[in-house]
Image 1: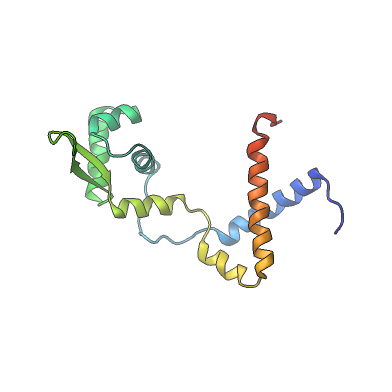
Image 2: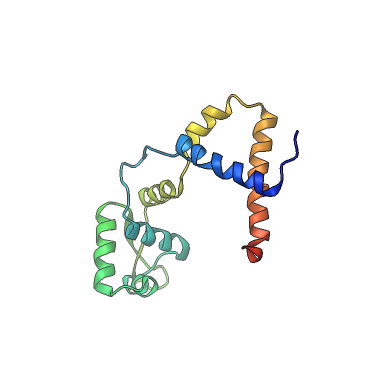
Length: 151
């Protein structure tokens, strides 16, 4: 194998990446619902924070309570969120992700199609698949370790 310096490797990887993205990009949706960026942000925030009241969600998302109520009502109507009683204080009502909300959120996080990737990887040997995955892990680890040294 010929020697490849850092700049050459970076250049070749950068040239190949758009082709990989176009070839394996997830084009179909399981849920037939594409959330707006605002809806995605609310779903993500709830997934990270846990169930919240409308007031807490408004405060967390820097929105007025009226605006947050409207957003949450739309997501509840779509079946992505539900209202639940707070087990610690039965007077409080919380909003939380439904299974459908979790599916939409999982799908919105998925950029590449696992099905397209699996189909292409069938033509690789188990060792080639292992090296591919380990190489990408190594690249991501190197990027994380050099975060402070970016130019």
